[in-house]
Image (tube, rainbow, N blue to C red):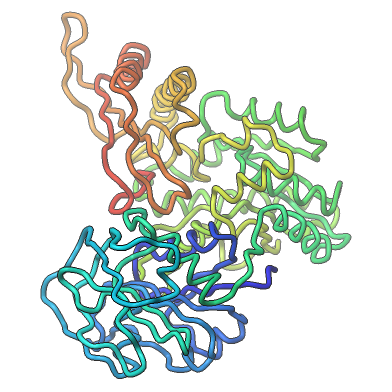
Length: 512
């Protein structure tokens, strides 16, 4: 584990994850933990610095998250952001004003006094605000370091105690010099070392897995995507032939995907690979299931049952390896407090309480772009490294409503056109993810001289860095038109195509 570690205390902001991402981008390892964590629990994590996130509550109101004063007694650098700044002010004797309105959007920040956070940044600079309450007067020992046209105290600091606070969001892309401010906190104020890299991660994980697993055997849930493939290659380098990869053809994959995945995994890697045909099992479990959470859990349970059944055929299989990533963990777990569980993920939300195999998740502390860097470090080919993310529940959560073989076949054909056109137009590598969704409704149309009443397909194409936030991709209209025309002309049963122009948040990337 790197020597430098930043603990991000989550007070309920839906973009807390961005703080952790920005810290990692600076080369410092970071973790997100609940605001319910005690100071003793945080101290046991041996943090080098602490960041207090934003949140939707008002300081002092009933059930609002509070600040454990023991965190400040740890005598390590602290940065409070938005609600985190208000908590610091309230805890240390400052004056706050509760507001019935929110300030949301850009503001111009003036630097009112010298502060390590501003080193190398020319003021004034644009920042992103999202808050209701405000600090009227800083606590004793704090200097006002920044202000805006609407806030006399937009930033404050007690540099002697290495406590800093800002009312805006430096983690947001809209804050022009936000990453520079965070870097100044990490390196100038906290004196941390940028010792988090994907090369060091791969080396560390291989060593840790070798020590943890020893001579035991591991079953790896392999989908052929970059996450599970990286897991398989790392584990193969750690334990060799004691790794047993299982690829389950669940009938929920893209067109010809099962054959292609099995072929290239056998061709490019010397892995023990078993392909299990389980289409009927999954379709039977999904019969008449429409709720997306129930779909995910049914699929998760079926996967585990199959893996455990296959593991019985192996000598001494003790572990089940999965490609769970940090966003899966974050979105599936409420940080107890105010953050909501967005949805349970296939890797962490559908597992039974009791399993014969011990779960092992080598990538659960990584974001997607970090996994791709690991993939490049260990020499995986581009067609795996840059393959678009594909959910573990597969097309089941892209067929809205009941999942049937007929509806899956319609979606498979439509999605195949999306993938081909994105590649041929050069947009496949330019976007984070692109796919088709089959909607649970029909619309009237005209084909030839006849009236039709057929399915609607939605196109979802997004730009993102790590899937924690995303924006709809501005793909050229002629590319969208070509995709739409081909789907309507070539996919039987579809007479309308729509384009999803919503961002995350408030929407998620997947529709279910």
